[in-house]
Length: 176
Image 1 (cartoon, rainbow, N blue to C red):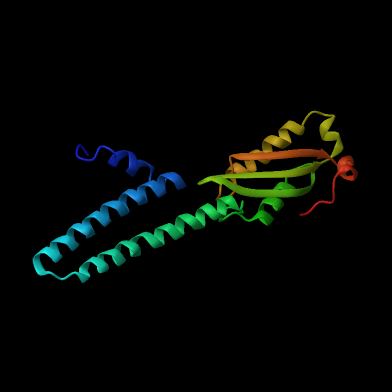
Image 2: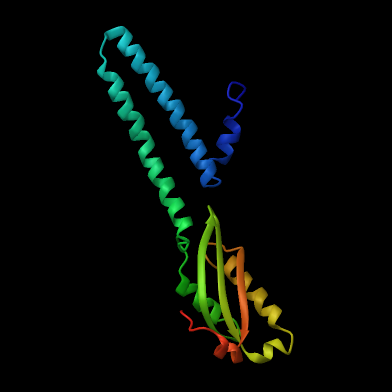
């Protein structure tokens, strides 16, 4: 590690997020490319076989392409705000509806804003009296605990808009 002071930094972050993985893969591919070029130069110098240079170039490309496709795929999922892999919104809806006093759920969305950072938002219709007797905050706590703890994909960043049932006629047409 004294020869390569950045090794620990790169190794510690290579799986942390998309940027660190891309940087790690760039460093690894540069190192492997350098080794391939050195071997290619040695073979050309000792044997005169110049086709090794093209083979080394194809080997370097073969190492880069699969990793680049993986990074592009993950970046695409983030940019397109796809539902996180392993999270079933129908299951989330069912659990939210099972919370006492919840009557309906609409505009339920889940996406990833960064690697490993899923977010969720939903409009949750609760019984009107929940806003008068003071336990709407407890329902909110139950909802946030549910999405953070119950599912394989833990959602620590959730936003729930609690609505009284009487509010439904003020809403735009909803989608479930």
